[in-house]
Length: 260
Ligand code: COA
Image (cartoon, rainbow, N blue to C red; front, top):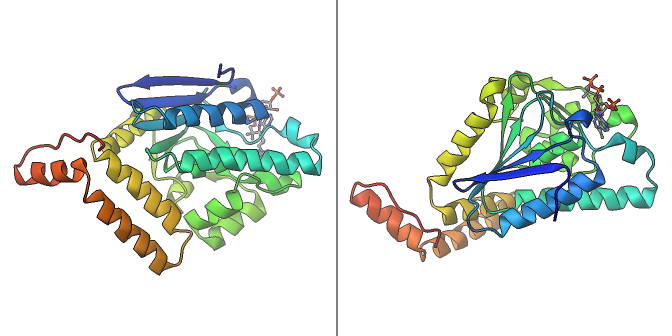
């Protein structure tokens, strides 16, 4: 697919996906959601891509939400379809099987906050502001924000953010666990890349299975989640990466993982 609203650049196994509508604060219109879906499908299937950074163009915003112009015109049927399409795209990111870091360099509001929530970790710049202002527009989250926000920061804090619609700054987002790290704006991409590369030094199969165990396990009763973990643990004992990782430790040398 030819991208109109995205830039995708890959260097040494790390792809940087930049949502590029800075004049609209990178708001997610239908076209951008479709492009993100296509881009993450392609990145998921590309073995040379081992990790992804998702960010927004310009100094002001990660993503300032779903495109309000489109939302204002939608029928109930279109609203439901739009919500399902967005949720599907976010699920694709969450289930990518390789680490995805959101580099939040400004506003991450509504759909933008939901998009950041679907990434595995979030790095915010000092000027970032996050929130779910949908209730101020007489609507509500449609890209799984009510579900992921409450799982990440807990029901009480999620309800406060969702019901007031107020934004929090980067430090408050860090305090409540909404972002993993706060860095100066000029260092945002560098720090995000350092974080993703730290993950990529580990076994690729480990990363894939950990993401699967956490994602699926959180939706299960503890005993089932533990059983899933034990099954994946058994499976990972059959991999070349397991042999190499343990052997390298015993031989006091860095491992050379193949992702097999
Ligand atoms: N959808 C569509 N367009 C948006 C948008 C959105 N979610 N957020 C910002 N824009 C557009 C503005 O309409 C404006 O376009 P224009 O120049 O053609 O008028 C442009 O982006 C710049 O935004 P502006 O509001 O002028 O910037 P600001 O610095 O004064 O305010 C915000 C920044 C983020 C506080 C403000 O844009 C805002 O509240 N946006 C909506 C946030 C929201 O409710 N998101 C949830 C949507 S479900």
